[in-house]
Image (cartoon, rainbow, N blue to C red; front, side, top):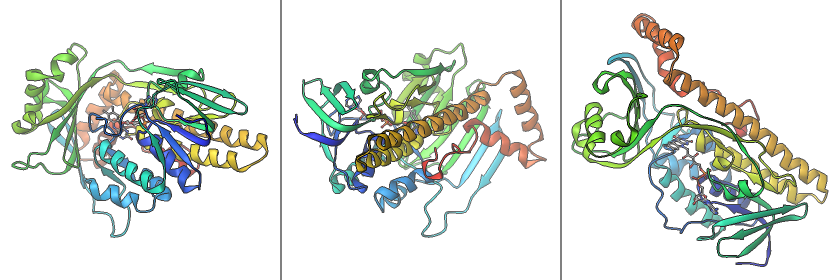
Length: 405
Ligand SMILES: Cc1cc2nc3c(=O)[nH]c(=O)nc-3n(C[C@H](O)[C@H](O)[C@H](O)COP(=O)(O)OP(=O)(O)OC[C@H]3O[C@@H](n4cnc5c(N)ncnc54)[C@H](O)[C@@H]3O)c2cc1C
């Protein structure tokens, strides 16, 4: 509890909140992170395994060396393969990155990224207030007062809200999320690497896997294990295929059987494609970042990879706003953040939506996929199209390149 007024408070010690805190410290600002959970809280699942090279670059600017640390703890697959109804239609291998260069991406469990971010934050002097669930946020032109479940009040000039998909701060400032929920269910599974039967480190997508009744399957390696996504038929029961024998039987059909006994996490989900109607409160004192501001379908990996540049841009805006005695300039700095990051989020939502058009194709897209699969042996471009389509376009939002994704 504190009666002091802070320059900046961050709500939420997920990857996006910690990125914002780290960026504020790099700009010379003091910052405290209020987190609802305990420091040793369990965060289930591998979640944001695919950490894009641009994300590594953004983190490295705030904490030189952090990108190398994450890359050293992640894996990089050099081969991508795509199958259509059991037949390989695309395979490409890439050389490893040149020595001294950051990789295009690294793949590691989100909890590991968070562990390294936490260490970096502590080394940089970020303060943490664990077990502080923010329940209220009152913003005026003078600043913000946050209240917690315990009844504590925290005052700040600016608040960066990174409290995730159910953001209490977003609700408190009256911001609304708009968008759709995609039809269709998916099961996502983490399974530990079997040292007795390690698999080649390759990313593999199956259109209509014949061993699982023609469902789409994605297999992605990460440090220590594999992530497997199964796209369900409309008639499937997600609960049945998410656990017990239902889970083991389809997993055994797409991986060596031992992997079905090494499952560490399984979840069923539908995609949300939603974006906040404004990324800041009317007084331009509260800035929304990460999943507090947007949720995308995970194919294309635009979740954490767009939350990190949100956080970096929010920290820069808060620093600029604190640096000027002219209120109108401070408002303009936050406004720039809100407009540019919302534009990026809309772009990312649409890009993730393109991937859904390929995962849940209409008759026309299905016919194009079939024709491409038939022609892939003679024309590599067709196989390449099949390979990249499930992840949506590769382009980043057309903003300042340091705020890509
Ligand atoms: C299956 C799956 C796969 C994914 N794969 C990828 C991927 O490959 N690449 C990618 O970029 N993204 C991926 N994502 C998305 C990624 O996991 C999220 O974008 C990321 O976790 C969002 O980070 P965040 O910090 O905004 O929110 P969160 O990670 O949700 O963190 C929010 C934090 O705020 C805290 N909190 C909540 N409420 C309060 C409160 N009232 N007061 C104080 N603290 C609070 C929470 O305890 C938590 O610590 C994936 C997600 C899923 C589910």
